[in-house]
Image (cartoon, rainbow, N blue to C red; front, side, top):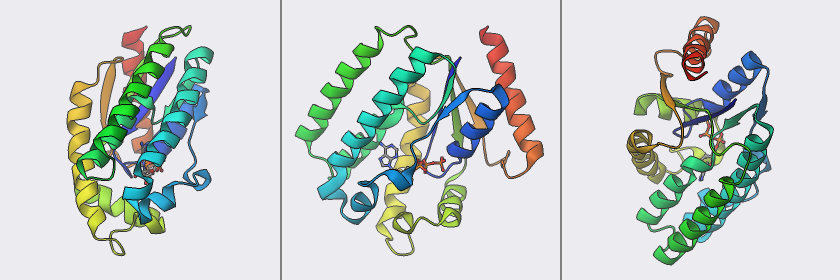
Length: 210
Ligand SMILES: Nc1ncnc2c1ncn2[C@@H]1O[C@H](COP(=O)(O)OP(=O)(O)OP(=O)(O)O)[C@@H](O)[C@H]1O
């Protein structure tokens, strides 16, 4: 089984990915932000580093999905299927030019067609997490990464809102695999009871796929 998690910045995908991997005894693929040299540069100067950051992520995600689809027993914390959303939003914000977007999309297209030659062509399940916008802001604040804070960079609130809204449509349009939605506002994963409830929902969904 290959499961991918998806959802807005700060929604709680990383925690959920860890819980799923532990529960199913599978390997989790994370992309630790501390090891990303471009991310802090991007938040300081999105116009200069927007394109570079998206190429950085795309390259990482391509390696991860290739390995995941080859090994066939994995959970991925965000995947190549949602990266273009960030690129499009940064294009709409004026951080990424139309030419950069075009080059990016062609590269992405090439990468996606390469995936068709792998033992498995797509994930088995996409687990999408959502909360309301206020909860997103609360969790970003609580997590406390300096460069993500709207207190020091108020313009970020607008960017976050646009991303949060765009994700709703992204979920509706996603058709690369079966999908399910988890309400991580109702099921806050800090409570172990909620973890059990969410894992039971995922088990149920997996059963229906077998
Ligand atoms: N293409 C992209 N993919 C993922 N993250 C991106 C991308 N472009 C910019 N970012 C930024 O990189 C950071 C990713 O952080 P992280 O991997 O912890 O994901 P997250 O969505 O915040 O996680 P979680 O749902 O676990 O809270 C965020 O600050 C996000 O805004």
